Length: 520
Image (cartoon, rainbow, N blue to C red; front, side, top):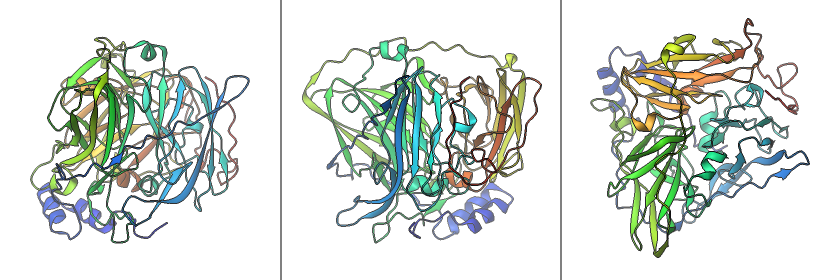
């Protein structure tokens, strides 16, 4: 592990948080050397000279009972991002990022995770509905040389999900070094739709991260804001300045913000309308015509872009509206314009059907139906005035009940909110209905300052009074600093049990992780 990659300075963050007003916080952040990156603008300055790498599809072993077993080997390596330099990186089944896992609703899957690193890690299935002991959070650590084999049945709508480490206190470090990959779920509804569906041809993953390199070509997070490390170079699917050869009239881009801190606002440079067809948890009821889509760390979106023969179009991140005032946007990556990817249309394009007018049904829940309402206030690096403690259960949820979580960022600075195991519906934002891009299934949402979000979620199928799921800010520096809580899902009448340091080991320590099948 290179010493060049460091956590944002705790003393700077603590200083900012201790001040009484947002104005003083802003002044402090601007004045401190190395805090905030100022305005970054790469529009029209990126030399798109590298073909976009497409993460390979993981080939599973299929057992006689149909179980698909995927293998992920966590390894250290090096990657040539810059001419003549090798950057220390980590990845799955390679030196950087990981393969794309694909399964259908109803499939039984097993993932054989082998840790070849010199330190422990974990693999969390972000957005997946599965038992808590298979979730891959801080309680399912995999020590060097160990194998962890979670298995579960896929039972959720088609969606673009992803996987990444989730170890308490070091998630940012592992993700920044490159440990991330996609997990695509299909279902009969999605497969029947006339959407682009040929992986790597007209259905293309776009994994976006921002990085900053030092003089030796190593990753560095020396430039940070309150949000965490701020990069000045975009790495897309592991490449800088990539282009995609488009051969069809329409192309489906699966956008993933895999950055540690930066929020993007994706748009085509000419601000043409694209069709937003899916968000975190799957398809929208109908396509939403948009000319931009904001994604905070961990969020996903699927857009369909219509191309003309021979044209070149640039996917760009325009300055996102973070709800910040004064100098705060500039020191928290809110004033940046960044070219992401060039789309190069062939002289002749194969015809593509129009995007269907109807996608997937969505039954809206009502807050009046919620059996329980919980309040979550995010401030500093705490939720409800507390930091993460691995042996403490913060919330106890009864299975198969609808809950309303009222979530508010009480600061003048950015936060976000992610809930494990479920996809939620946003009932309201500051008392108003959500816009189309936030009206579908979500598991992660950006929280502007002083704005109340009412989230509706149902915890179904899996109960375990001794094994928790997580909720947390998905700005990874904040998560690592303790901005996270734990909840267990129990049967009616049950109470939370005892949560050990590591729920996969018999005595709470490190040991071989050979989890057994868990059906609901």
